[in-house]
Each structure stands twice: as structure tokens, then as C-alpha cells.
Amino acid sequence: MAEQPTYYITTAITYPNGEPHIGHAYEYVSADVMARFKRLDGYQVRFLTGTDEHGSKMEQTAAGLGVTAQQLADRNAAAFKRVDDEVLNISYDRFIRTTDADHYRASAAIWTRMREAGDIYLDTYAGWYSVRDERFFTQEETEVDASGQRIATETGTEVTWTEEESYFFRLSKYQQPLLDFYRANPDFGGPRSRFNEVIRFVEAGLDDLSISRTSVSWGIPVPESPGHVMYVWVDALTNYLTGVGFPDTDAEDFTTYWPADLHIIGKDISRFHCIFWPAFLMSAKVELPKRVMIHGFLHNAGEKMSKSVGNVVAPEDWVNTYGLDAVRFFLLREFPYGQDGSYTHDAVVGRKNSDLANNLGNLAQRSLSMIVKNCEGAIPQPGELAQADRAILAQAEELLEINRAAYQVQDFHRALERTWYVLGETNAYFADQAPWQLKKTDAARMATVLYVTAEVIRKVALLAQAVMPESATKLLDALSVPAAGDAGATNASNTGPRSLAAFDEQLVPGTPVEKPKPIFPRHED
RNA sequence: CCGGGGUUAGCUCAGUUGGUCAGAGCAGAGGACUCAUAAUCCUUUGGUCGCGGGUUCAAGUCCCGCACCCCGGACCA
Image 1: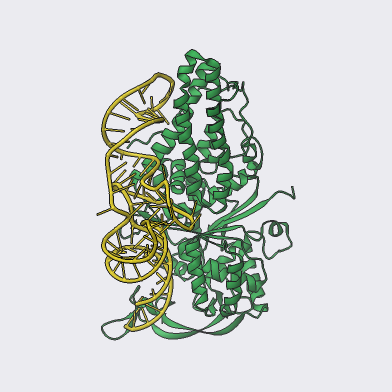
Image 2: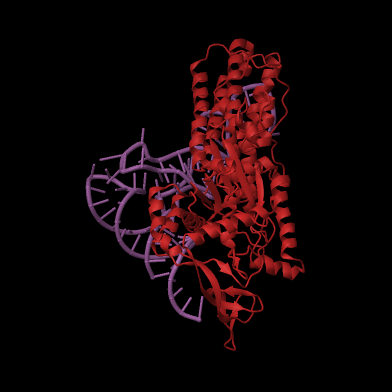
């Protein structure tokens, strides 16, 4: 048990100041697929997701709604958790909330460590402050109105140049250590183009970072400093440590899972994760995470999703329209992870119909149908393999390593592309061998072709579990692969005939097979 | 304004270190088959690889300039 490899993966925690949309779903689904794949591949996985609930915006939104910040956080966090649980089938191990009690302890602890390292000092934070909004605005967020008064562009309220007492983190001290770290760990940030942006930013020099506020009350108190709450990012990033039991660094959770293997984040917060976070950890003398993968944003038919345009898609709407597994497949197959993607109804339907219903679903249906009708309702006994049989099986066998390599760098798009290419080859093989002809001329040969085809489908289904847990499970059921694990949902999937450890095994001839039912329906508008 | 990336068939995109590189999938057209979810297989129509120069025996593939798009950052406000 101690020898089992571990894998700790996180999503960004969401600021629950609105409704979940398909962009959130993209991040959750991709992290979920990664987590499931690793579980299926034998890793003991810890998968953390959750909500980031502190900060002035929550405070203001709550005030506007006439509720407390805690009440707003409770309500919105529940909405995000519900999407994970009931809409997207996300296999997280813990849904963390930054209002959780243990998170307060972890945040106070990392603060104390950074202070003891000599990296926190008290100074003043200067900026444009709006008394009405009780918040600071940056220079770009303000303008001068007709009367010559400077106002906040967003809210139209008067702002005055204000200096507020604030704790600062000596980020400047970590410029060189960070650059050294990046050079020693070129795969720390991905994709490369995004990581390069981060590196250039650091090379340009780093200012110390204001990390506390006295103008905000909805936050985690700074230890021994009444009136100060932590700047929301100190608190937010620390959630990754809270999730594995920090500050109990000797406890099993921490020693088992830290450092994190992968933080999945959106491109809007790459700086926090690739610069601030490693610097905080260096200061606190905690090991750094191994990788930060920055995914792109989703656009609706090429246009940025926005409430004002009214083109925001709710995950639930898509799932109701296309089905969960088709949505999950589409999100990962259609766009190279790390780049922005554009979706349309036609694009989703195209993937659902051609890749799922036609290439995979129909191949399974036609081969299993023939097995049930012509092989006494059981997995047939193959004869000696012909060149064509060995060729197609060889292609299927390579898929495990191809998928592992692609998943290792979150290249989901490529993993699926290569897998579906083999399905295309298998359809060609099936048509070329024409088992429905062999039925009349050479039943033994027919049995071999059907066996080989079913075996390819088994391998693909094993790999597909991570992406489409429900459908792939049905497919393995249809092949009478003994039930085991839970399609990567928990570490119960680490071993057994449905884990990737069984990839090189084979279907057992003579195993009874039920009359198949279509698993991937075509989309009808 | 500076830096990075992009611009390849109707659509989405692959194209290592320059020499079958003009490709794949989807869509379209024709044919085949009938096991199957009107699915599958075969064949096939599409592109002067953003524009203009240059280097080279040879350039989507290198260099320069230009246009447009995206992403970072700076500056002004």
C-alpha cells in the first residue's frame, strides 16, 4: 500500500459571486477526467475543488441583497457544489470552502510562517478609495467626471487618494529564486506559451505585494493584528494546503499528497498561481507544487460569453440537451487544452453523432449484435490471428501509452484524437473482414473477427471511462467485463478488470453476452 | 508603443531539424455493403498554405516588410 503512487490534483476554487457557466464546467470536467484517469491507472488520488468565499465583492453583493456575506456564500457555494454533484458527476474528494474552520487554521499558519521568515512587514497601501463602496480602485478603474471630480468608473462614486495601513509580502525578494525555479522546472507551467508570459513578467521585476486589508471585514483575520484581514489571494491559494491537512505537516494526509501534482486553473489567474503561490511557499518553507496547467476560455460561436450579450451557457442546459457524457467528451475532444475554444450547437452535435454514435456506438452495436446472434450469445473463441487481426490489435495496444503520455501533459485533445483514429481503423477492419459474409463461408474466421473487434472496443472503453464514466461503464457491461471499481470515481478503481492494469488482458471466450442496446444515441434536434 | 502567438481545403485544425508538405476529420458528390443507431466501407470534389520581397539547387517550413486577429505588458487618461 505504501508503494502505491499518489496524485494530488486541484481545480481553482471559484469565487461564487454568480451562477456556474460552461466555462466553470470545462475546468471541473477536465480536472475530473484527469483524476479519474489517474485512479484508473492505479494512483491513489486526492482531488480537491471548492469555493473562494472571502473578499470585498462578496461583502458588497451580500449587502446589496440584504443578506450577510456568510449567507450569500452558503447559498452560492451550494449552487456550485450542486453542479459538481448533480450535473457534471465530478469525483472530487473534498469540496473545500474558504470559510471552513480548518482553512482558517491553515491560513493563519502560512501567514505566521511567512512572517517568521521575515517576509511580511507593515507599510501603507495607497490608492483611490471610495467611501461609499468601501473599496479601493486602481488608477485604470477611475476617471475624472465633468466637474473635475475623480470617480470610480464602475460605480460612479467619488474616490479619494487614500493610504491604508497594510501588511506587505516581500515578493521582490523572490524574483531570482522564482526565475531559478522556472529554469530548473521547465514543465512547472503549461502550456509553454502561457508560462513564458509569466516568466517575462517576473523578469521585468516584482513589487512587494499588499496582503492585508483594513477596509474589508469579510476575510480571515491576520494573526495578532486586529483590524487586518488577509488579502483574499493569500487565503485562496492556501486552500490547496488546507486540503491535505496543513499545518499538520507530519500527518499522513500531508506527507502522502503534498506537494500537489497538478493545479488546474484558468488563464486569468496564472500570475497568482505561477508567481505569488510559489513565492509564498518558498517563504513558508513548504515544497512547491509540481505543475500548474493553464486552460483557455470557451467562447460561444467565437464571441466571449457575457451576461450583457446573453450568450452564457449553463452547464445544466447543455447536459439536458446533449447528455452529460457527450458534453464531457466534446469539451475535451474539441479544443486543444490550454487554448481558447469556440463552441456551437452544430459542433457539439457533430461530435456526438459522428464520434460517439457512429464511430464508437455503432461499432459496438453491430459487433455485439453479431456475437449474440451468431456465437451462441457469448464471447467467441478466436482462432489463429491473421495479419489484419494482429495489426488492428497492435494499434489498440499502443493506445495506453499514447494516452498516458498525453494525459501527463493534459493533452486531452490529442489522447482522444488518437483513440478515435484507431476506432476509425477498426471500422475499416470490420468492413474489410465483413464477418456477415464469413458467417456463410467460414464461421471460425467470423468468430475471430468478432472477437478482435470486441477486444479493441474493450480497450477503448477502459480508456474512455475517465472521460465518459457512465457510457463507458455501459459499454464494459455490454462486453460482460466483470464489474469492478467505479469508472475512476474513487480509488476503488485502482485495480481490477476495469482498471488500466487490465488493459493488456483479454476478453474471456465463452463469457455470456446480452443482446446489446444502443449506448450512444444520435442527437435529434 | 513593446513583446509573444496566429493567419493552411466550406468548417475545425495537423504539418518534426527546409527537399512526396500540399494533409486529416467533419460537411459535399459518386459507388459498395447490409452485421449495425439511415450507421459503416471505398472513391472523390475543394487550397497559388494572409500579402510582398529575400536566402537556397529546394520554403507553409528560414530572413525582412506589410495587413488582419488573439494574448500579455507599458504608457496616457
